[in-house]
Amino acid sequence: MRGLLSGVLSCLERERLEDELSEARTRGRNLSRLRQLTRPERVALDQRETAAQARLSDHDAEHGCQR
Ligand SMILES: [Zn+2]
Image (tube, rainbow, N blue to C red; front, side, top):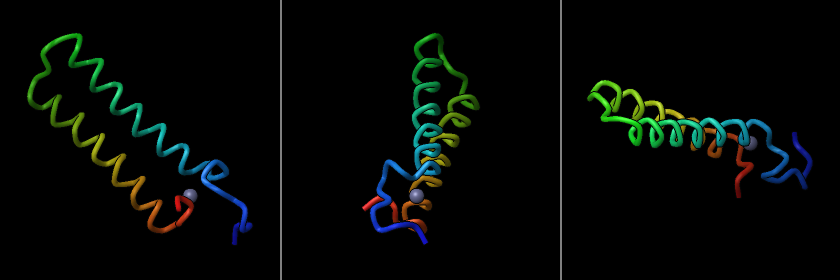
């Protein structure tokens, strides 16, 4: 059990997942700015972002640190 006062900032796992998500988003944005992405590339980037988003939601649901 975590302490009652352990809030959002103290959850390192959540921080890591947020980093992952923003990294996926940034990478997709940067790449598509540089050149036209092929369809598989776009799909892969989308999947990566969606997966990161899902992991974050799962974490929130299971861990309950984001309230
Ligand atoms: Zn957490």
